[in-house]
Image (cartoon, rainbow, N blue to C red; front, side, top):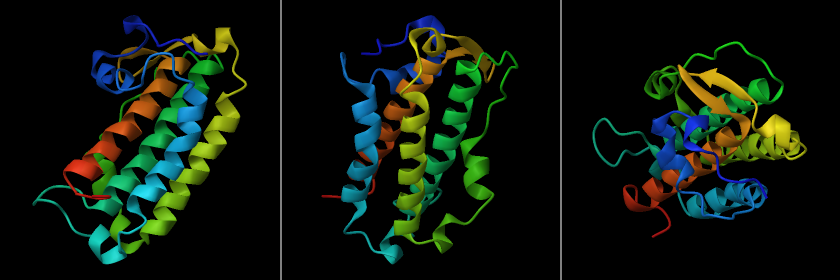
Length: 174
């Protein structure tokens, strides 16, 4: 069991993601289950439907999934650097700039979900063997303190947030 990170292990912004993770959860079971949950959620969505936006200025479903892929890479990179005791401060990223910088809508929804799935599986294999000391090593990202365990919780909560958004704002899986 990996205990919930303390408030001093992450920037306040990330509390919303961390607090989504149920108390006493097996975080590796949650990390492992999310790709299948995402795939099941979007299985009935066509590529044309996945290109549509719920409102002007909002991301398409494919852009949401592409954002999940980008964020998964960035959070995992941060977690690896912190767990390996890399003391260099890590800069932030602007999620909107990342989405604008590519066209996720030319890709198939299936390929985007596959990309997320493979990344997440690799991340579980990378992070599951971390010991207690590695999980609580401290680094800095976006000008805030961060630990590897906080980043694992953030990864889970971030995907939970977007799954909920796909269900409520995009009416996926309804």
